[in-house]
Amino acid sequence: MQSHSLKLSPESDLMNSIKEYSLLNNLYGYVSGVVGNLRTVCIQCPGNQEINKFQGNLEIVSLNGHFNKGDVHLHLSFADEGCNVFGGHLEEGCIVKKGTDILLLSFEQKIINISTNDLLKNESRVKAYILKDCPWSKRAIRLLNSLSIPHEVTLIDNDESFQKIMAQSSHNTFPQIFLDNEFFGGYDELSEQAKIDNLSSFM
Image (cartoon, rainbow, N blue to C red; front, side, top):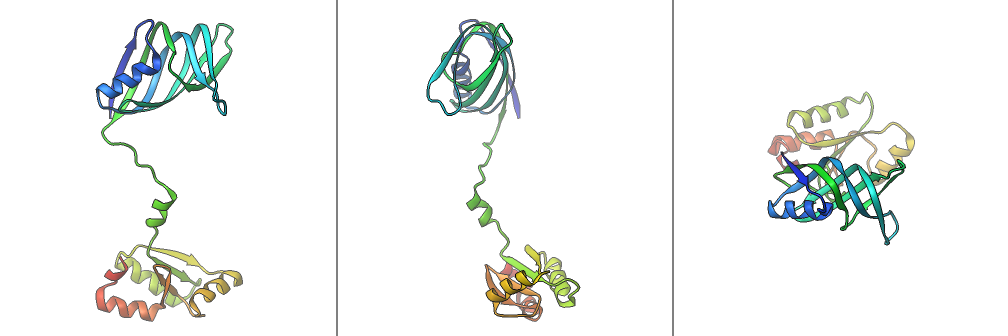
């Protein structure tokens, strides 16, 4: 992480100054802080495509958002001389009055966007359905843990969940081990597979 201090002179365009600096320096990051004033503000309010323009002695209250090598997504809030506060999506045409200081923070790598599909891909391949105080269930979980096999454990503690899992596996004994959402077996099958490959096929 690296900090960058921008000092904008009168008549500078707030949005374009950040865009140009991030583009010229190949930066990705966030606006960390700002202090200054503007003579003209152009913002877009939520749910409204129209650009709202304000003029006068306008004090910046906050500036939030990110920049990515010339692309920016920024939100500005500001106060007029009557201490009325307005805010919205920053647009071009926000002109500095006397001066504005901005602190930017940049990062070496872009933050990864995690989607629902990514989360599903990262689900454990192994799912263990167990009963409370069942010795075979406890042995199965101990075996998975001892071989460092990623797994999800679900406790079957009511008739509804019992009927649901039995419908999937066609078995009424526990534990019930599923691999890639397919029924694999119980403790005996798990133990036999461990003798074959230490459950490496479950990784």
